[in-house]
Image (tube, rainbow, N blue to C red; front, side, top):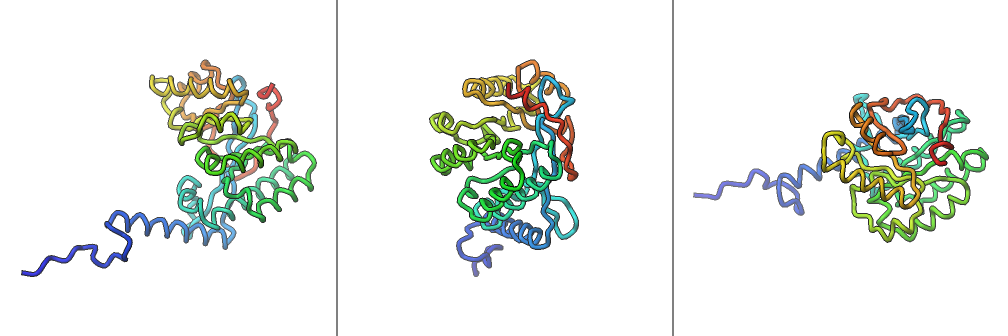
Length: 279
């Protein structure tokens, strides 16, 4: 009696299970979808307010969040594709689009203070640097209104390069935010070297914090780290009134999340409270 063929016998070499094959296929499809969106001009920024915890009526700044539109017209947030394109040329192009659109919005709205996400991999990318230089030359206020957000996992890949890059641009007035703090493996000795202006606590520690003792301990510890290094501390993914109230009482500097409003494609006017936050 012959051996029953495996149902995945036709899977290409290098894929040792149906799960691995499915994941690889999905990743390739995501990259193709983002590539097509970029080629057809279907990448855009959505804007979400970051609010001082003590005065949530007036934004401190906004974050520009990259989105792409797929072939069916669905808007796809970065969290659904960024991991798949992070190491690719498409990842660098997405960073360029985000920076270019963000600088254009800042030019159109002279009171807008805006945070733009980037990968540390884009530091040496010529096109990205050209866009930044043109933006700074074209608007003398752009530097002091621009915040560059770098994720913890990205920053730790090339810490010495990130430190030098940040130092050069901070002299031009640009601020830096360490995004998703607590989600990765940042070494505290690197944290001392980076000199980030803003620390953003990863949402996994913020969601449900009002009723989660573990998250309360962790959020308090992360806030204490920010205070020790003189960084403005932002709690991401604030989704309920209870969590917002708890974080305000804790002494958080700024809050961001759907409780205060979903990201919107239309660039907002920012009547900034930044000076009071940084004081």
